[in-house]
Length: 211
Image 1 (tube, rainbow, N blue to C red):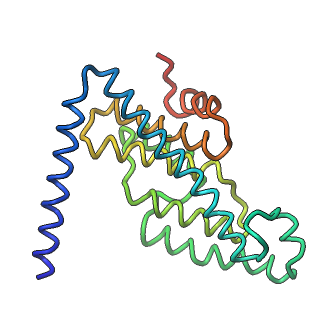
Image 2: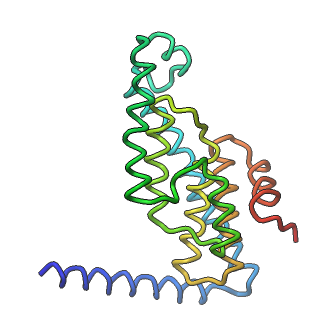
């Protein structure tokens, strides 16, 4: 029974994927218009993901250290007992460590080097499961007071979403890399309110391609 359900889900997934691929090629007047439409879609999706990540991170900090989600984290941190400041980061590390070891080694690190590695060694392809695992691991690390920032994780998450769209539609390597850059740029724009900075970051750091 379970095998039958799994087979039906796989069949449904393939039908949906083939339908979306055919729909993309139907509306693709030329390479430029097709990538423009996908770039807009990836940008909107990754921008919302970046804003959602910010709220999820603030919620994690509020749950661990108390205080309202909108409160200054430094003020909240000063008000909690010393042993909470000592044990919370250690507890976060004890949870994130096994996640990295058993679920995905790709979610370790700050995020940007991992994206660069995907561009150079894996043709811009990032496995889809990295996206939710990176989001959860980063929120646990930063939310419990770990020494990390939100820039790297959101670049990794945005790049992963862009890469996943390219992989889902079976696009060429060059187009997958372009969508990866779109996702990373949208992530920077959404988390830092810096759209032009996100574009320049992707061009200079990730893609190294200005044409």
